[in-house]
Image (cartoon, rainbow, N blue to C red; front, side):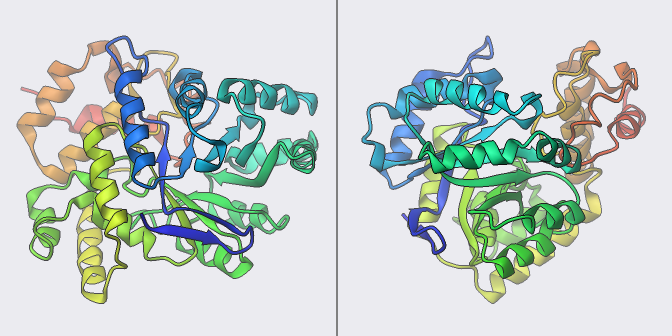
Length: 374
């Protein structure tokens, strides 16, 4: 397993991190604990040491499940990361109450990497007024948190303001070969590297989108490496940036685990010709993609029942794949009428929390107009 060394912290982890946001689920929506545990076990047996969860993942059940699975391992066999849901903090005292709840769920005495979750400008200003960061740093002094950082979802100017506020132990950004000019992007990567703040990367495969490219795009990769998965191209592109220390993959199947393990056990940095292939693919994808939805579901549940990520996934796939019959079936037959884009009541609740700052109301109208119907 390819490992990384955090020079500023003196810590070594696996370059591949197990993201605990997209576990397989049962028909009732609960985590398929048997399958998910097998996946975590297989990953750890093959060298994955960085496990990333968060308070809201899987409707609040991810931390408890992860804690139960990891209980059978020695504490020095893994590194755990979780996040403070800053939107739940209304007063400074809430920090300790929430953190104590998280430790209880995880069945642990301390957390290795603790993040202020999904910061944007509004949340950042709010937590400063409430002295939230001071309280988190106090928990670090007490030994309950080893390293303090943040995850980020806003424009570059906000990222610059936050990352230069103090000497963070690390930070986490969205980064992949398509999303280099949104949120922190390339400029954010360069700034973090300049400041000596190591990066943890989320959405390296853009919510799975870069693992499912149409034939007229994927052939560019397949003609160069016939046996390598599309996911491996996306992961290796991110991993070829030296200040990237952990790449999170939200694995949903055992096949995802085994493919990712193959990528990082037999890891090599992308060469110049491979980078040219990536550039070619990027240009084609950007020319076809309607919006930047990653399916993170921060916008859900919609107060009026619209399945926002599903609508955008169908719409983007239709634009990229050009499969009209499939788009018709997925939108008009497979999706309940109550979940379709034309049920949007324009309340704006979704736009207030979208990490990608997508104009959701506008784009839902476009979905309604552009998905073909008989």
